[in-house]
Length: 188
Image (tube, rainbow, N blue to C red; front, side, top):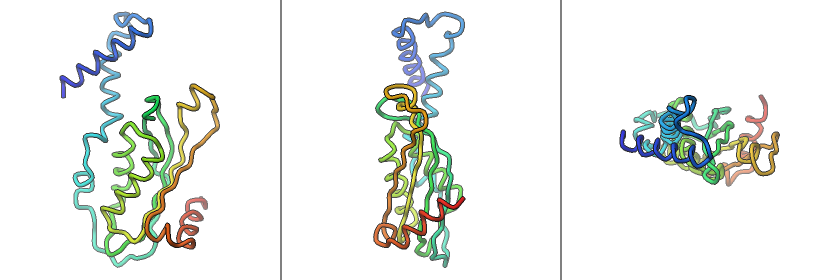
């Protein structure tokens, strides 16, 4: 891991120099290693697996009504510009004999968000992971986020938000189920 960290730090030093800065000036001397460590943290989802993360926290349950977990904070890195996007994720599922430990929803969101990513794919990956782990009759995921690549560069629109949704199983088949979920996450 140290070799990868050293390689990343070397690349960050080259980027700093390429920007016309002096990587040896006092304020920047330790920046390459700090930036490398930050990037490793922000992309740690590549080094995680769904099975290890869930760690058998799937439990038998007679619950068969909708379970909603909302306002899960997330941040990710846009794969196009490597700038952050920050927002929240809302998840619902219809258990089919099994429920997932509550903290695992946030861990699943983080695992996929901590990769170079686009929001559309992130939404799908989270939904499919929850479906895989729980065997649910249906899964719904909505993500709303602000993208620094749109706010800090390009069109520079400060108040724009992107919303994406993925509906699987009963959430895709049943308008009533989908409407119930969307109403629940709207009523706060």
